[in-house]
Amino acid sequence: MKLKRCEGNPIIEPRGDDWEAVATFNCAALYRDGKIHVLYRAVGDYVRYASYLGYAVFDKDMNLLERPEEPVFGPDIKLWEMSIEDARLTEIEGELYMTYVVTPTPAPPGDVRKRLGIPKPQQAHARTALARVKNFREFTRLGVITPYDAAERDVVLFPERIQGKYAVIHRPSNWVGPGYPTEQPSIWFAFLDGLPGRMYGHKVIMGPEQPWEATKIGAGPPPIKTDKGWLLIYHGVDPNRVYRAGAALLDLEEPWRVIARTPEPILEPEEPWEVEGDVPNVVFPEGVAVLGDELLVFYGAADKVCGVAKARLDELLASLEPG
Ligand code: BMA
Image (cartoon, rainbow, N blue to C red; front, side, top):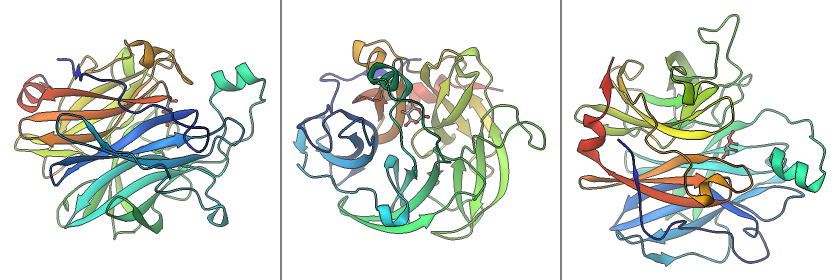
């Protein structure tokens, strides 16, 4: 089973000569009031490589309704946030929340550095923070939610409590090797003791299995509740650094139990704008909109533009292989 790309891709491309001039990628999405709301990561220059969030609104047929000229959210240097990256949106108990990556030392990707002759800088751990969002334009920072020692980029909230508690899926990329139950960066479950809160009760949900995800895996959009289980779309990276997307089904009550998983990727870089960009061969899903029976998956392509692809939800669920 493969996702089918929609007409009109890429749906968001760099624009102007300011904050979103060189790259607009890795987008969160949420369907509300008959519209699809998208928050995308935008980079204006390769010197700072600082990311901001831009906002775009589409109708159900993916016609662009609105794309403000100004960023809706950006880094606050006073908080040692130099870059705001890779947002994910989740509605919980009527409130809208966003997880986002804060990078204290952003740097352009390797290919760009090579092209421009920029040396590799020392980089500190990326961490993931939480914000409350109003109208997709007002953001209240609630602080970092990832463990102090963990390098974390792929953190998504469950839209409902699990066993009465808030819960997340995360990917501590340095929790590997001796002392950890996994050898490769893996997808973990944790409870959260509040919003914001501290993570506890960490359990590995799944690690890389197939060659296309052998180097590392990480959550894509927040999990989607279905009557068969939590549907988790995730990315897998192979030893050649090709990013593809897969899907898994997790138990509704105990989401650290994997019911099924796609052995083959459901989306992989094929189009020229997915193959070539600032980081070649990347599809990086971060947002979904469920429109009745149809699932729209929003993804960054080659760290340069945004794309959207779709599937029938029942077909995707049927294609997941138990075991
Ligand atoms: C990941 C993150 C993403 C990026 C991807 C491909 O580690 O940095 O933001 O899209 O790599 O470069």
